[in-house]
Image 1 (cartoon, protein in one colour):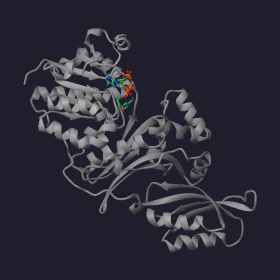
Image 2 (cartoon, rainbow, N blue to C red):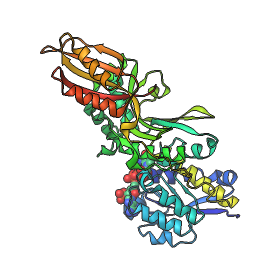
Image 3 (tube, helix red, strand yellow):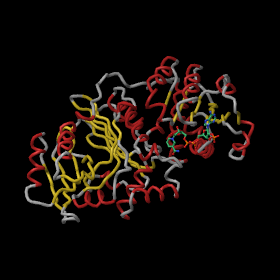
Length: 431
Ligand SMILES: NC(=O)c1ccc[n+]([C@@H]2O[C@H](COP(=O)([O-])OP(=O)(O)OC[C@H]3O[C@@H](n4cnc5c(N)ncnc54)[C@H](OP(=O)(O)O)[C@@H]3O)[C@@H](O)[C@H]2O)c1
């Protein structure tokens, strides 16, 4: 279908919406040679018309009435950038049902209701694209669906939250404690006023659900993902991890194992020579492993006005090309398998723990006897100098063990009088 002007409506003119408006404006001269058609933002839905007027060249394109957009037959593409579940879900579904293509960066919504949205797109032969929902400016959804489609993916994991990566980088490089690094992140605009979704790992959990679904062709939703945040990490954990040749990163991990999918987000020790250990500040990176490609890593800005807009506009351009070639809805939902998601207790990892124990002969033997009872073998152990009150600090890294068995061993240990405190327990990435 020959279409020279493709009309799009933006929903929301916040950080990303403003970025999309700017990027589309910057691309104006090149659209015809690049795409064969021009994309015009013909309406923008905002809540406050007055506040938004300063951000656009022509305030007449602003509206605070969704009906102006959904009922406008001239609008081909709706770009949802208001975030949250409602009214975003209702708007997206009604746009798809009206035969409009939709681009969204809304991970909160897609991680829970992705299937419903993709089914609606398929039913109406339109595109629903969401590259920006995972790792902002880093291309990963389309690479997985298209460039890497010739693989059976075994693993997709990475650093998918910039705020927590910034905090952990400051704790590592400057020895800061968590609360001071968080305060710095807030001051510099890397953390939101309410940082809960970032520091508790929820934001990363949504991205892991989406990544796992796309990588393994089987639906994984937010509730399937086991999540731990970084609020309990101390500068001391990071220092001891370093002594054991590792860094601590908040990792989102999805593995496709013979027994099912593993999907979790937690702070993990990662060997300092792993490429992800060098991803610092607010940068993100996604590491994939497939049976044909082997390892591949994608690195870049995981958030921000223009990097996120880059991904959104890439999706809009894809739709423009599909409209021109009359091949919309080419790649919809790719979840054609039903693989179970494993409980965290059934996953296998290595574990790092810090314990305060009685400083006397036989305590280490007592500890290792409890470990042996549950199949936990010790790979590395360091006993630190004795602390006050005749106690000593012991740092242990275990060999691979089932998480449920490790936890039972920890419970038994914590009940022993020789163990005064288990200060931390973290997972270790890798074999
Ligand atoms: N920021 C990033 O770096 C980033 C990265 C990746 C993905 N995302 C995703 O992109 C989406 C947008 O994020 P953002 O950072 O741009 O958020 P934001 O700055 O808070 O912008 C959202 C905008 O939507 C407007 N809005 C909210 N509800 C509305 C409604 N019912 N009708 C009209 N306008 C409405 C808000 O208006 P008010 O100003 O009146 O509140 C605000 O201007 C989210 O889904 C987010 O998860 C963001």
